[in-house]
Amino acid sequence: MTLYLRDARYIDSESLVVSATHLAVEEGASGGVHLLDIIPAAGERKAGDRVLDCKGRFVTRSFACGHHHIYSALCRGMPAPPKVPNNFVEVLRYVWWRVDKRLDKDMIEASALTAALQMARRGVTFCIDHHASPIHVEGSLETIANGFEQCSIVHLLCHESSDRNGAEYAQKSLAEHDAYLASGRHGLIGLHASFTVGDELLEKSVALARKYDTGLHIHVAEDLADEVHCEETYNKRVARRLADIGGLESERTILGHCLHCNDEERSLIAGSPVWVVSNVESNQNNNVGLTDYDWLQNVMLGTDGMHNDMLRSAKAHQLCCATTGGIGYDEVYRRFRNVHNYLSQFEGIGDDLNNLVILDYDSPTELNSDNFLGHFLFGIEAIHVETVIAKGRVIVEDRRSTLVDEEAILAYGREQGLRLWEKLGV
Ligand SMILES: [Zn+2]
Image (tube, rainbow, N blue to C red; front, side, top):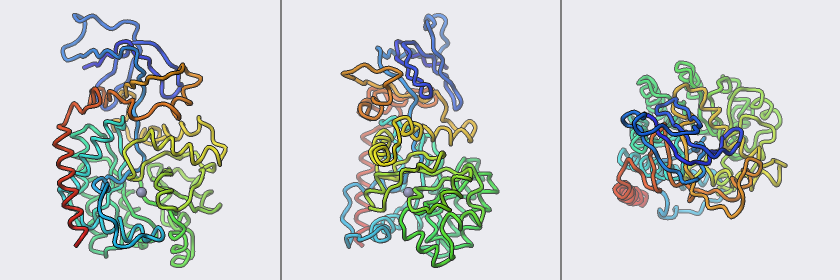
């Protein structure tokens, strides 16, 4: 089936050329987009084809998130932690490690559904998620996958393996990856961070990644404490530790943050095929520092569980990096779109050009190929996302999901959120 978009102003996401045109959008995991002079007459179209009138609105490629934690979706408004954290490790100890241990299947399902719904409405059609539920492990990835798919969000998932809850749960996490990937799903091998992952778990994770020809997904040097622990425990820096054990060999590997890497580590990472994700709002929220990544090509953007809005992540990245690092609008946009280059390694995964947003962008100034980046960083926001097309199908129309009962999902989220908050008090 083909979706025809009448009277669009199509912004090519690579060349930034703006064309007043009609579009034919192919359906399927690998479909493309074709510019048309004329939309075929009703008698020439196939059964099931649809024509959507864009009325001159802007249309461009939809967005993808390079690093998310949807397990935090029910935390908005939760009770304050028992102690105000003083540093990053205390943030983990008093906030996130108390939350993740209390998640059960229903809470994970509600987290996946509410996050997926919110991503869809913000034009984010692909999510690379890093999931933590150390006690409820078995089947957790399939639960998230199902929740995402109900809202038509394509995904690359992993479970956060760590030794911080003991060997039994580390083993369960490895087994969860093994079962999920053996079922034919695409995914990564998730690890928390060097300072909670011993050598045995790290080696087994690298072996599992090799078995399924995939990569690791791990936080690296998010806080200086990660580096200090590594030097004290292994007498080396984090990236060196990863490299020595085979953790920097795959172009599918994703390192989160890399804020405190020294020059040797930067050379190691930049000289390897791995990818790094920047999450500046999270970094500021945790007061762990910032870097401008001027040493790296393979950098993309994420939300780190802060929210579901990649346009917001791009604007925050610009505010943090452009003024201090001499990074232009074009480099911010390149990083924003780099996730598609990363995902292109996974053939047929569902991140092709037939994922689109129709923007009701009422700009008071001219938008053209030459000044699009100014509009991208200072004008276009999630509120302008009116219609979203995923794999050639309309999944959001007039800012509402066409696939799910939004009220029911939000009610389920509130119900499961209250259950989680009650357990946090115990
Ligand atoms: Zn993270």
